[in-house]
Image (cartoon, rainbow, N blue to C red):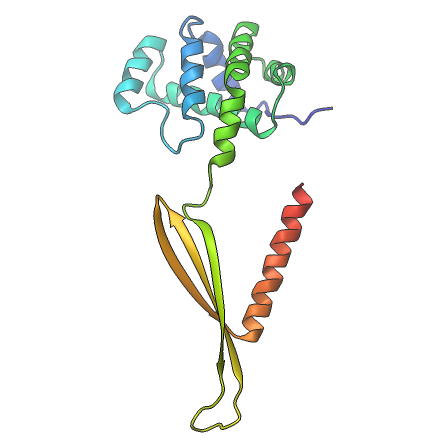
Length: 196
């Protein structure tokens, strides 16, 4: 049995009613635009386009926003679950989208799924990506008050990249701090491994 991708909440039901009433000739174009913008952190339509679309689809601003959010959510869920067309169709039936709209959504998904999934895989949730790590060990061996002091310090430098800019982040660790940091990284690694 496949995981339920959509819950029939009052918000979804309101959106489904609006989606089912949309002009079927304009619906595939709307779906294509949503799929083209799915991986981007920007609105599907700018303000001017949204105003024209409200008139074209005979909906108000709030209704259009709900329609776009719901269709975006449908495709995000389909991408997350790597939904096969038949599974997606079944899931859409469970929230009572009509057959004509289901067919259009599934056809749009078939035509764009591979591209969308590839683009989403490349998308990051963090604004900066680590691209290099350097380290060195420094040993403080004496101090005016303590002649036999041996205090190792680990210096870790991370190269972080964002929008083609590289930023260097240097961190200084005592033995205890570095060991604690290492244990945190081990925990993160084990959780990532558990997801595979």
